[in-house]
Image (cartoon, rainbow, N blue to C red; front, side, top):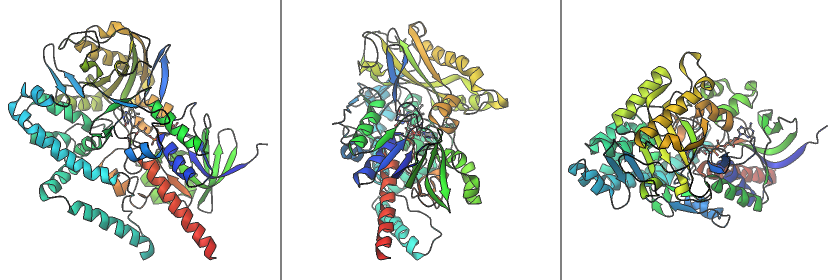
Length: 543
Ligand SMILES: Cc1cc2nc3c(=O)[nH]c(=O)nc-3n(C[C@H](O)[C@H](O)[C@H](O)COP(=O)(O)OP(=O)(O)OC[C@H]3O[C@@H](n4cnc5c(N)ncnc54)[C@H](O)[C@@H]3O)c2cc1C
């Protein structure tokens, strides 16, 4: 018989948010155990060998949103994390002759190739967007005001929280308030059409509005997804995206080291089968192995739909909560590939096989918002588009630890595909066919690409779900739509990292501020857990 163990806190899932949460709880003096299902911690932010001699960030592939406070608190630099900037932010090959480069000090000149008017508007656009992104930056490490059905004792802190938020927003002038409203409710397409007239710059910016968002760039709410991708920074430079040397796994390995140094026990290959609930309170977990671990507090790093749908006896949950969580909208239109390359792509629009700045960029292959909309409509009708959207990154141009000398690795972040194929078709039957299509698309821009592919790893939405527990391949643990954000993430009344069961908390991307490698949900959940534990200790002392 297996011996029952116990600790103060058990965290289900060793994604980056689970690790961050574990770190802060351990710093507060609690004994913490992290249980990760896979053979490696990091969740969607991991680096693995996918072809002999070639390593890459397997899922998440670029860094910006990781919160600077968390980088500092966990001292990630001391634990080996180094983040570098790209030589160029974005490169859009458009056809055999034309391209757009986006990057500091050159976007204006580049955009002027297509529209002088748009070039002249870039500075104002960037300033407005950054001012609104500042609002979001301020809120990322806050617990959203939680709509409570409790008495005044519960309602008062939430009212104060709401008032604080109100005061923050009141500091914005009227034009910025209008901008904020636009960015929360409009489509990325409508928003960008209001600023610019030429297609390439709208495609470059609008791509952020459909990342992980299975929707047209003209779908209401997609402007928020765009905003979500600009609140980050790299080494103090706002809105910039960069590369973690060693891949995204370098971030989570550094987090794991920081947590272990504070005494966190991290167990890999330890899938949790069930959260044990007694009289409405979570009291521990049962592993697939049958081992039980008792804990005062259980924290879940999982998509809320996975936690409440698969790990908890439904009879333990209030019916309304159970029904709503079943309807939690998950499903990105994302198809992810990693390829090992014998040589760099030689673009028709900008020839050359030697490393150049455009090879270090996020290379967006989708020339216009209309093209992106069509890709979505095709996927909706038939499962995928024959003219898909691919963003390619070649991190080995910035990091020689990933591929043998002279060779390269590329991340292909492809959209749109249907999270679940129509008419009962299985992704297992279509994975290779769709991967071929993605390679063909890159090849149409860089005709040496197909022949340069030495090996490939393919992840359909189903593979993302199987490998990482991302329901419907949802890269954010739930759509970033207005009905699933802020005080409604994951549900009105539960935006404060607490679910309906006592002692059970959520610390993953299904909570505020949502997906991306931010560390913020883990940070915020730890703060709420510590508040509750202090309250309980005070109550015990008073009794
Ligand atoms: C293809 C793809 C590309 C992306 N690109 C980027 C990007 O470039 N930049 C960016 O910032 N973000 C990106 N994202 C989003 C980002 O990676 C995620 O939002 C983020 O990593 C989620 O972190 P998390 O800690 O909340 O959860 P996860 O990373 O999902 O971690 C949850 C963990 O729980 C584990 N688990 C699940 N079930 C159990 C169980 N029963 N028992 C024990 N453990 C369990 C899982 O194995 C996993 O390790 C991308 C995501 C994907 C999928």
